[in-house]
Amino acid sequence: MLASKLCEGIFKVLIKDIPTTCQVSCLEVLRILSRDKKVLVPVTTKENMQILLRLAKLNELDDSLEKVSEFPVIVESLKCLCNIVFNSQMAQQLSLELNLAAKLCNLLRKCKDRKFINDIKCFDLRLLFLLSLLHTDIRSQLRYELQGLPLLTQILESAFSIKWTDEYESAIDHNGPPLSPQETDCAIEALKALFNVTVDSWKVHKESDSHQFRVMAAVLRHCLLIVGPTEDKTEELHSNAVNLLSNVPVSCLDVLICPLTHEETAQEATTLDELPSNKTAEKETVLKNNTMVYNGMNMEAIHVLLNFMEKRIDKGSSYREGLTPVLSLLTECSRAHRNIRKFLKDQVLPPLRDVTNRPEVGSTVRNKLVRLMTHVDLGVKQIAAEFLFVLCKERVDSLLKYTGYGNAAGLLAARGLLAGGRGDNWYSEDEDTDTEEYKNAKPNINLITGHLEEPMPNPIDEMTEEQKEYEAMKLVNMLDKLSRGADVKDLHQDGG
Image 1: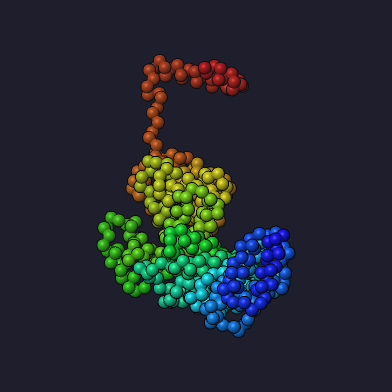
Image 2: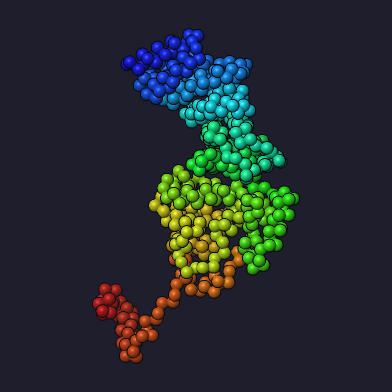
């Protein structure tokens, strides 16, 4: 093919000592051609791969990145390698033979604190992501041999310009500028690579890794509290952070919340005193200087996750890919960490006051989650129901109060709890307090639909005495026939 011959010619030119501008032009053409899998078959050789590695500065262990004029060549070479590795199985095998993952980590270490070479970092991370996606062996190599977890975490720290105020707590400037597009892209690629490296961490978590996972969770907390250059980029950044948090052992997610500083504690006390005495529920959660506070803990990150979940529900599509990760994360956090569960319960299932509408009718987070309990996608309906069940401390009576029996029947049947009771997990014994409005309405609440229904009129009240006597005699005759063994069909015929 003509395209394959053109590729071969480009590699022959790249071997020679040619000006940088010519190298960039050749690599740009090669990048476009490398999108075609058929073109790559004859040109994907070890020698050609080594040419690209040399141009990308992946062969020189001690060479520093000082020549700015070479940066465009490095970036274009990395772009070509991304396309070739993604589209060619031969290139994927050669990347193992050439130990490409180790070379990429070495290049990252050269530029992890150099903000003016973000493009190099971005495509280095993208290639690392592709390798770890396509080869499970490389995930293990990155995790243990190449120390990819701390390395990639440091890349995120650099992208976010994190300043630590405590072991697992960073300074957040709510009035600071958003991330630049380049920093955001680098962070997203690092998050995706970290996801692959840690994909099985919840299974093989060792106690010795706790510190590193907590540091990573603290960095991800910082990530949730900052914004990108656009709303779409912010959502993409937070989405990848949510996916990665799902890989963190749940015992290490306690760093998503943190105790207030002395100054914040004083501010919270002032805010609580300012609230009216009758606003008891609101006193549990206060907002001061953009900080969401609950029970003396900073809940900003959890609040961001809750808002992210609600936005995904409002989209109304791609629930399995877009919604279930954050719902699963919030469920596990609630199950393992009491303060998180109580805060989410306060936000999602506040004390019931108005029970005139069905639980699935309305625009609150509770209404939206209850609607998902009867979704056509089994995975979506299960995780939505599980989340609400955990917020209710896995108590059937509490769940039914907020959802109604009809919406909860699927979960209860799967758990063997149709007759009532509670789940297998242990929770604190603090009791829920019902509002006076709920207590007054409770006798008239339909347990199936979960909302207040007006008492049905008694049909006997509108009958005359003759009609009542007629109906009574008809009932006596039916009972008499039933006692003598009559068929049900005969009873219907006699009953009109």
